[in-house]
View 1 (tube, rainbow, N blue to C red):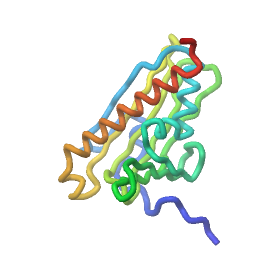
View 2 (cartoon, helix red, strand yellow):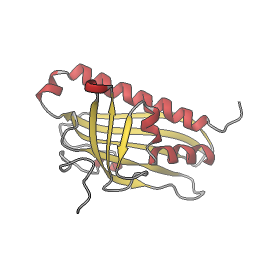
View 3 (tube, helix red, strand yellow):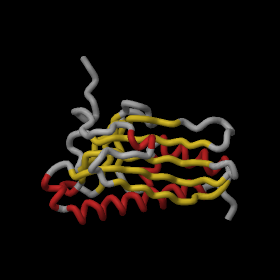
Length: 184
């Protein structure tokens, strides 16, 4: 008997993989947030592991169910927030992954995932950590999206506020991951 997929349907937006290149399809509003996290390969590696293992989403307050314990192309994940009948689920599929390379600088690690039917938006989001040649570590979140239907379009201000809130929680979670194991 075939295994049941976590979420059904296919990716439902144009420009699949665009966040890896930092672009977006025409007509899709873009989000770009960057935050300094600290310095050093240990910081970079902790945050990379947290991103690729869904820990960043959990620390942002999202409930995460995924086909795999780590992000990989084709893996489906349903993240959600809220409780009971007020839980909003957001099914996605990983479209690209960049793994950390041992000891090299500069480099980045992270993934991009796109929306599936049932998500309140249509588009893509990527979460990456980067270490530059000076050893400085940054978080980068890119996204492009439109409301999935008239209901979410009608709540445009609320939808954009929710996206800003989750993005700020990702940044807070990444800063926490970056500081773990560091001397006080």
